[in-house]
Amino acid sequence: MARASTSRSGKGTRKGKTRAGGNRSPGPRPSDALGPGQKLELYRWMLATRRLEERLTNLYRQNQVVGGLYRSLGQEGETVASAYALEPGDLIGPLIRNLGALLVRGYPPRDIAMQYMARAGGPTGGKDLNVHFGDVRGRGVVPPVSMLGDLIPVMAGVALAARMRGEERIALTYIGDGGTSTGAFYEGMNLAAVWKLPLVVIAEANRWAYSTPTDRQMAVDSMTAKADGLGIFGESVDGNDVLAVYDAVREARARAVAGEGPTLLEARTYRRKGHAEHDMQKYVPEGEIARWEKDDPIDRYEAVLVETGVARRGDLDGIDAEVRAQIDAEIEIAQASGMPDPRVALEAVYADPPRAADHLAPYREDA
Image (cartoon, rainbow, N blue to C red; front, side):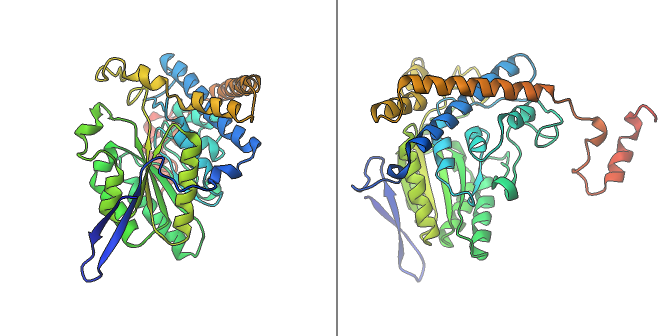
């Protein structure tokens, strides 16, 4: 285990602890406690993520999606596994490529589809788009912040609030490799480090920050080096190995609730679609996407389920058929939802609804 220290004036040194992927201590893994039903549930959530995004892609091409569409193709495993590893009372802050976390937390696919299509029945009633919504009290989901990096200090505050209330819960959020270059990332992580807050941050090493490759974003080979600089535990894990991510998050959670502070968990994965659906990825070297397709997280997990006797190939095909049928039914429900009434556009936006109504008066037919 590599160790790096950062000096603390007048208080000696604090050790940073990093662990490279595969350097786990021998012994039981948290995923060993998962039963066959739970392992298949992980598979179902991963499939649901991919099948829903495939349908959303079709809707986008039919001009039914308002705004951009952000895919997680190739990254479904790390999102689903990390969300599944949490306890019901924990809080999670997904970003635009963490749709799977919303499904794990109980959002039906229709809600996500209505949100992308700006329908009245969506979580924000058509006032916002993609995954910009949350439900802190009901589902423990903190809404994302568009400015990448800014959700880190927010989640540090969420973790601090949990500790001040004496609650045994943690906060978990995500950041892209490019987002770790922002000042807000360092400010939030440093605060969590100094106060030993129960925060877990998944740093998605998906090779690209929009069109900028990782080696032009940072001078280190692994983002765990940033954990060393902060004096916190850092680990690099194969993000396409679902059970490895689950294990790492469960262990990070255990350290957090034990008062050992935050963890920066690097999930090595790959973004097989562009930043958004309109991005043609012309900046990607030829053959790179095809190479990563061979390391698909769903394909790898299917092989594990079959090899360990959890399921037969026919069982997995049956689950896929069920998921496809469910997604189709959910999309139909979402499409049946009407567009929002423009007269309520400013409700729940300003504190004074009458003023909002007066603002829209010139647009009403009876004006």
